[in-house]
Image 1 (spheres, rainbow, N blue to C red):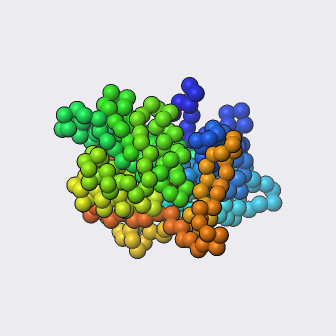
Image 2 (image 1 turned 30 degrees about the horizontal axis):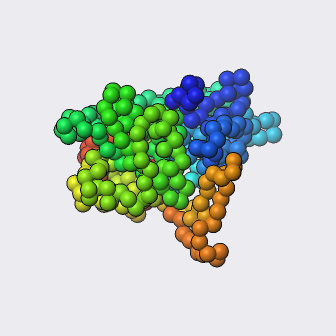
Image 3 (image 1 turned 135 degrees about the vertical axis):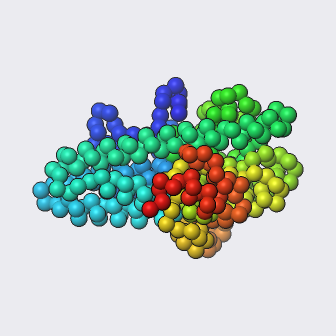
Length: 369
Ligand code: MRU
């Protein structure tokens, strides 16, 4: 993506010092565009933990680079196998819901053979982490092409009126490496001259919609309106939404989808109003080992402070203010599960399929062990 005429992806290796991983600091957007340097496994862990980086494909890539940085920490006193196994466990423990994190860490670990000298081990990890970034980028591009057809069809069937798309949270290029998952079809439709308008759910408590999706779409020149999380149902009842496209943090082999808290309510409203509801995801977000989203996906429970306070921009700085009585007890679930029966389809790098075990397994037969 281009920001101020410069091409960015959301994570990359510093060209002048390949022991440094660079990321866009998502805690500061949209108020400040800043990059951050990550130099150790701890730096990566903290960046995922405090949401400097977030979004399923991006935390996967960050975890992969975490293993690479762990290889650079090996010295004559460390046992490479133990050191890397500990780093892998530590990184994966950071956020439990998005399967991309454990998938990417395992992918890099599998490429390593511990009898190699440290430099060769690092090189293997570096190549694997970069491969993950390149593959995720390409998969998001393919998701864009497949999702574009859905938007094009709506445009043609609706008498070439602007297509109204509702999205939740940020499944954009910031949360991926580039293009985004839910946003890629939107960007591609816009590039093709199809008029689109996006309803952006603010996505409490952290407001990734208001802060990140609104910023991304604005940078690309895509018309959008920010709405409160409770507005979607009303808009759907009044024919103001043509399609819902959301991202995904973990899908089961049966098509249940974990995504940012509130996604399920959008799917229910879409179902009640006969509006197509799609989840866009690369195959790295599918957990082929589980079949029951409600019972098998761990939903992250986050700090209640995110609910009792809200952060925004005032007098040149980012400030946080409490929005409830001082001693309020709050609970903060990060994700919910949308059952497959509410999902019209999954937009993947291989095409659009129904959210059923049969279709998913057919589309990804190469991934089934
Ligand atoms: O808690 P977050 O901001 O990491 O949650 C992100 C989402 O729920 C996204 O929709 C998901 O990761 C899709 S892909 C960027």
